[in-house]
Amino acid sequence: MHQAGAPTTEKFGFNQKLISSIIPSNASETAPPQSNPDGYNCILAPRSPGAPARLALHFSHDFVHQRGVIAAQRAGDSAKALTSRTSARIKRPMTQPEPHLIASPLDTPRTAFLAAGVVLGVLTVLRIAMAALDPNSLYADETQYWLWAQSLDWGYFSKPPMIAWVIATTTALFGDGDNAVRLGAPLLHLVTASFLGLTAARLFGPRAGFWAATLWAVMPAVWLSSIIISTDAVMMAGWAVGLYALVRLREQPDWTFALILGAAVGWAFLSKYATIYFLIGLAIAIVIDGPSRRALLTLKGAAALALFLALISGNLLWNAANDFATVSHTAANANWQGQLFNAEELLQFVGDQFGIFGPVTFIAFIAAVVIAVRRFSPGEDDRILLVLAGFAVPALVIVAGQAFISRAHANWAASAFAAATLLTAWVLTEGPRWRRYVIYGSVAFHVIAGSAFMALAASPALTDALGRSNDFKRIREWPATAEAVALRAARLGVDAIAFDNRNDFHQTQRYGPQIEAELYMWLRRDGPENFAEATWPLTSDVTGPILIVSERHWEIPVIEADFARIEEIEPIRIDLGGGIERHYRLFIAEGYAQAERTAEFEATVAQPRF
Image 1 (cartoon, rainbow, N blue to C red):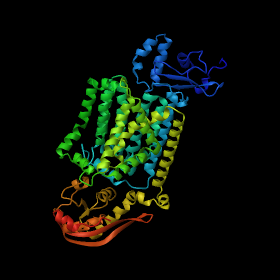
Image 2: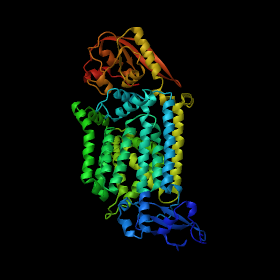
Image 3: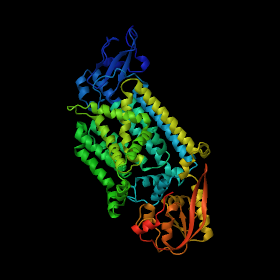
Image 4: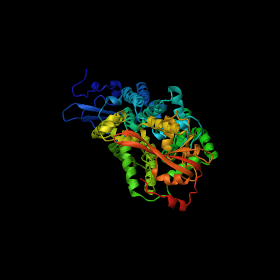
């Protein structure tokens, strides 16, 4: 029978024997906060004077560790509990008990696991259904990746090969439809969210694990990235698995997790070269964190490195055999030959990060980094918070610097947000109760915004009614566009069609299989600048009349200079809805010979871009 004045625990669903083994039976509601050396922080926090005390618990170990400690305590051998294998698990990086932590069903591993499974399962099914029902076409980059999947290799002009391998797998299993091309995206984000949840649970407890998985799944950028196939979606799965393997390796050096670490980072590197930031994170961890150093500077760490190098060796050899085309393309994207030092680009990039991660959660991430730095102690050995910051901050700082020097796309620092999610889940599930309201509100806002985006993408009529047609013009009416080009080529009887825009070229390749004429890319520069120009360049060997399909109308003077004879014919116009149209100017041309691209030539053909 429960004694009067004793704190009630049954309604919270906690194990009474576990509680009694940690808290003395005579604890009163006025007892000061207590903690024990096993890593549990246990507080009796009265809600108000004279009222029954509310028990607030935080478990810093996972469920397996809890069972190990309980078993040792029942045997009367507390010392063994502290020196067992499970006591080596990472402890919650808190130096003082948190009196504001309120018990939650999510503090139970089983409940947190099941809740996360339901959330992730529902979102994944919804996104797969969305991909199947989406009336729009693929983006041009997606089509380019699909083309890569038709001829598998260890590398391509602008990216490593993993995305092509993923698309080749999903289309081989589920057909060649657009939904099959995109199927890898929601499945890979499911993997990312799951492993981030597992990592957070081991570091900070089940509640943080649930919220880390949920925060990733509803991140604003993930709503888009889950219904289109991109290198970021493929890379982040490797990042999440790699972070989990690192945490397990820090806990207890193990060959299994050493090999998983090497394989995961290899996967990520073969997806996108931004994985270099993961290697930077590992270097920072070795320098500042004792457990990471002891785990990685061993034969197991060497095995992880060896496996990583073995996996990426095919891509390195491919680059060497192709004049390091991918590396050169990546360097060209930096655009350091353009106008340098642009404060506006920096501000734009920083603002974009609020949109990618979420306006409030991005602020929470910054706060978590500040707290981690302020908690730094020179004599501290375990610095997991700073380790996580080391996997997030460098990418943001380096790409922000690139934005200031020249330019940077919003997703160039996307790799930062795996570790950022872990830090955000930690800081918002710790401390005062109002932080929980921040995470509730952020998740709700992200769900509403993401659902609105999916509704717009699924309904062209709604998009047009809201005046957002221009946002979706790049993925509308490509089958109709390809059909119009096919009909015009057949009527003219040409054997070759040349494009001045790689996006239109790739979309015609995807959606115009009925076109009998050969498709080529007209080269604006002396050499190829993209995959289409490198693989299907228009050359002087192409004889006979050529149908020129021009979307870049300002380039027409250059096109005219490359042909001995050229005549403009009736254009093609495709209605995209909402008053938007796709407009091609068409020409019949013969006698192709690229004019030399000298400075004098460029001055002669220069036209304002419109």
